[in-house]
Structures are given as structure tokens and as C-alpha cells.
Image 1: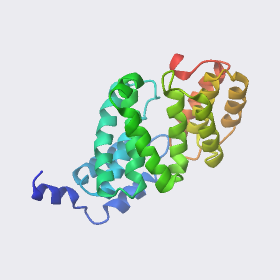
Image 2: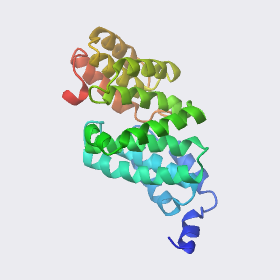
Image 3: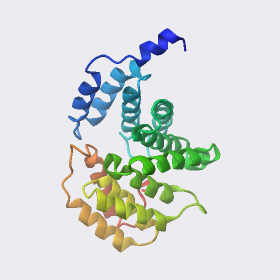
Image 4: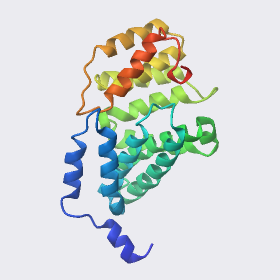
Amino acid sequence: MGLTMAIVLASLPAGLVEEVDARWAQRTPANRTAIARELAKRLEPHQGDFEAAWRLARCYVWIADEAPYYRDTKTRFRLGKKAMNVAKRAVQMQPKRVEGHYYYAWAVGQWSLGISIAKALWEGAESKYTGALKKVDQLDRSFDQYGALRMWGRYYHSLPWPKRNRAKSAKYLRTAVKKAPTNLRSFVYLAETLIGQGEHKSACDLVTKALKLKGNSAKEPDWDLWQKELVRLKNTGCKKLLENL
């Protein structure tokens, strides 16, 4: 990349970050993906700037999450890779800021789901994912409603045997539920871990509790998606993982 192009990419229009943040705060279950797509287009020309780069990575991983985790693997692979590249750039620019590390870990997760966990591990995803999460833990574990706790919990649940450790997964996810008690994603993740442990009654009790919660669109504009997944788990008697339905 030439010097002129680097300067152009790094140059942010006045007020862009404030406008992006204001628009991001307007997300609801009905418009969350549309807003992420809209903002990605605005941020892409400026990804040479740290503040634009991590927000762009955030857009990509949220767009990839439009469908449940077990569907649309091609989109997850494509957007996960794009998010990894731009989040890595953010980390290089500001290694002591949490945002780049956090969205890099999330991006690795999306990419891994896109190509399959087993193949991702073969290609070195594990060290990328855990390395980024360890940096998040060091810098600010509370970021994104303690999102690193959810990621650690899901990591230990999703690993293939013999790496899988659902006891560790449950420990992280119970803490995540406690720290962010309206985050329905955490409840789904914990319920699936409990199902994986054969603790079907505990999983159903958790699902019943979660279904009584009112989603907070300001913090979790995807709560409707996770609420539907909770209903699907309940309909099985909490005996099957979502990917097996």
C-alpha cells in the first residue's frame, strides 16, 4: 500500500465515529442487520483508522450472526475472514485497546463455524482465539457485557473430544449469566452446555427462567433470535442441542 493510499484510508471524516455510534445505538430486533450493513459500507473506506477498523469488524460479526450459529456457514466463513483481517489491523494499531482483540476473537469464532471447528483447529484457530481472549481478560473482561466469558464458555463447549471441557464451559457461562442477567445468548449457551452434560432438568429450569426475561434491545438487539432458540430447546425437553434439531 502506498503512502498516499494509507493516508486516505486512515483519514476519518469529522463526526463519522459519533454518527456511527448514534446509529448503532438505534438497533432493534427488526433492523439490527440492516444497520450493521449500512455502517459497514460507511466504515470500509476508513479501515486504516483504529476507531473505524474495530467498528467495522463489529459490523461484520453481527451480520454473520443474522442466522443461527448452525446455519449459513458460507457467509460465516466469508465475513469471519473479513472481520479477522480488519480486527487484526485494529490490534496492530492499538494493541492496548480491548476492542480489536475482542472482535478478533469473535471473528475467529465465526470463521471457525464457517469451515467447521475441526478444520479450524487444524488451521491454527485455537491459538488465535485463546490468545485474543487472554488479551481481553487482561485489558477489560467487562467489555460488551462480559462477552469474553461467553466466548470462553462456548469455546470449551464446542471443542471436539478430547479437548472439550463442559465443566469449564458451565463455570464460565454461569458467571456470564450472573454478570449480564438479561443477555439471552448466555442463557442459550449455558443451556446447551448443561444438555451436553446430561443435566436436562437443570437446562430446562434455566430455559424457563430465561423465557420470563424481557429482552433489552439497547444492549442485545438480537434477543429475539435467542428467545426463539430457547423455545426450541424447551420443545425438546432440553434433551437435544440446537445443531441436532
